[in-house]
Image 1 (cartoon, rainbow, N blue to C red):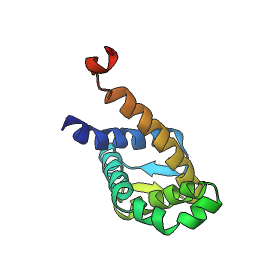
Image 2 (cartoon, rainbow, N blue to C red):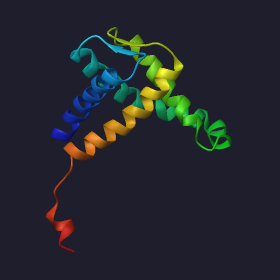
Image 3 (spheres, helix red, strand yellow):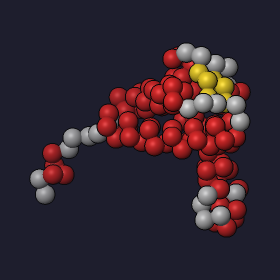
Length: 122
């Protein structure tokens, strides 16, 4: 249960940190960063699978590179839901999506790591 609550917080922290290092992305407050993290998570959960199925031929032809375009497009949708989150164009959205997924995966791996002694004893 704690993992489910921590993932949006980690997403918000990722958004806030990327805002500090990337031009073209502006977040008004920490609350807006947390809301943007929640919206990104919901878009990835609900919208992204549908878009991936619909664009499967293009994704296969581009050897998977079209997934970067899908991710950037989803990031461009976030300002419609979070007014304090501003993306100035496609390229900042593309770089944001790449950095977000790297940073978010790293933070989740670091903070949500499960210590299961049964796995190590075999």
